[in-house]
Image (cartoon, rainbow, N blue to C red):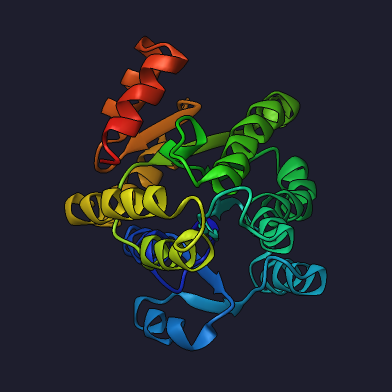
Length: 270
């Protein structure tokens, strides 16, 4: 029997690459996103596109109910949908910050709540939460993005302990620089909110650093392979890091003090 997987944020980047890769490796894949028109090409891989807005309770409930009715339940959940807006804390409207947390944290948590009853009943489940290297290390002007990814790390650690006895694995994926439209959109937003404020020169520095990251960014397939490795491992690791710069940044964060790490990051902004 093919295992049923739900991949959120499947209209582009890591989500789309993961949906295709898992479908090609024998999984029954549902790809979910708001922009259903951007997922029509997934049909050719046998992937079933589903409309999903992770900020809408109605949409979340309908998505899980639809898959449960068709496939009997979701065995593997890949929480990939995300928002990556940057901007100085002082400049960024709280309404935008709340939206980012709604997408990156509360949407993830609600979807987990909805799939857990079936996973518990079956004594099997894999919950894969896409965090980021930015869930462990920070750049200036990324306060709310980092807050959301740090939250995913903590949420996943607590959840892992809660559901282990039910045969459910919770896995965190920490991508480094990966090709996606999110980087460009986040940078554009940052320049809009902070480009002409007291943080303008810092915003330009961060933007230049992002351009460098984008140039060396890995293809999303790198993360798709990592996800496959994680869900097929008999005893999966709690965290998998991959793509450009991921392991190096996490290693440096581990060995440097806070102030040393800050100094190193800020030296890249010049």
